[in-house]
Length: 433
Ligand code: ADP
Image (cartoon, rainbow, N blue to C red; front, side):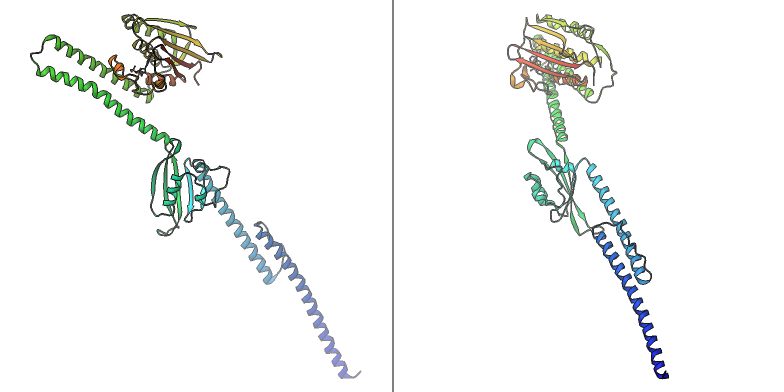
């Protein structure tokens, strides 16, 4: 063979060999790349579906291997970061949910970022409904609350407003700005705290009324006492009868003051929790003591006090002094508000299921007008102020009685017809809950 031809064949063979090797390498690379791209598509699809636990499984060397390692690392970081954010959000919502006040976080545009169930209830919204993302303008129905939100959400001021709403509700609404972290200027919204202070306001008003009433009640006899003392001092020549009459008034007013102070102290000691010990109190025995004390006053008006105890051995667990005071106040009122020659009856029986003891204090006295029936247990309420005062009433007796009955887990009611008589009914559970 021609040596030249032989040389050409050699080169040709060599080129073919190289080309085949390159082709094999290219095919292998293409296969690997396709497999890699397929895996990449699979993983990226899962990641976009928020399945962050997924990982690259294809093992490749070189730069692609490095890329998949970095990609896996990136997914892992995303996974842990998202878990952390989720946990933080859960923590925050749990904290907000467990706060007993209504809490709302609102952005500057008025969109609700966070709201707890208490706030939903207070704003009369459906507790089941997810309000996050909604604008408060479409959520808050009460006009007064809406006005406050519109005025102060997004403001830099800290505001506290007390609002009187329908149904006698009183809310304290506190609105504070939320600043972007570390910035004292960029406000991103407001945090609103709503507190239902209806009971608190009621108690405060009651306290104010009580103080005003006490001052008034104390002032009246004191003015009278000082007036008569002054008159006695400047009138040396006064005749004995007038002098004695004035002294009688001073004595009566002093007794009234004493009774008033005793009743106020008693009321405050019940409210502050008395330092008394519970004991088994036999109701009939206590009643007999009261009967003996009041018999003299009843006889002086020729009033008959009769009684009938279905069970003379029945006893309850309570404070003996309080039980005695209940009997004393109700029998004493019967005598006070029943004209001469009247009748008073004290009855004890049980209710149908024998769960409760019923005590009744009936009289055929002056009775109570219908409109006063639900007010007579209020402190200082008297149907006829002058009459009550005249017979030594303080207006606190029934308030004290009601408190004491409640402390036994019981209840007191009244039925009365004006001019016919009254029936005070005390119900006490046999076993105190
Ligand atoms: P008071 O010291 O004035 O008697 P209470 O709290 O005991 O105060 O009673 C409040 C008011 O209820 C009385 O002033 C009276 O008008 C009315 N009241 C109480 N008990 C009777 C009764 N048995 N009959 C008629 N009215 C009564």
